[in-house]
Length: 134
Image (cartoon, rainbow, N blue to C red; front, side):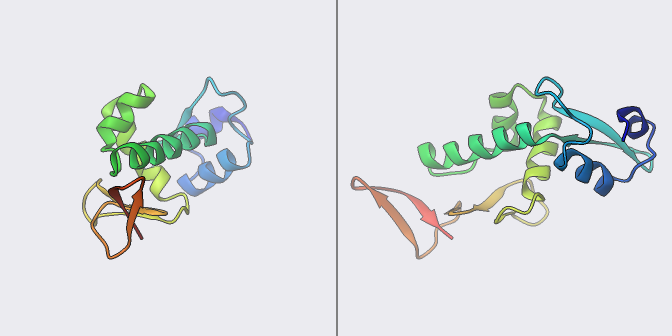
């Protein structure tokens, strides 16, 4: 599969995602996304390295602050534009991990094993309770 066929819009977004997951398109960490044309919209597809970094950053935010990062915080932490941060967060949430966003927003509600909203499952470590579980 050739990268230029993707940039010319010959593949659908699901085909692009499969290519990235199977390592058929991106071969180095220096290239973190490619553009796939789907209809008239250009959609960024992030490679697994960038998705891993987004997952780690989100998990670290929950551990240190008790909440998920906003996509602008995620973008700043990873050196991306705000729009790239939003797209990366959406891609991460659609990757099959047990997580979800509040409907109609870009706010992370649940990111296993953590939950942004208070639940009956409180997590306390060293006498400090700032986490909730799913």
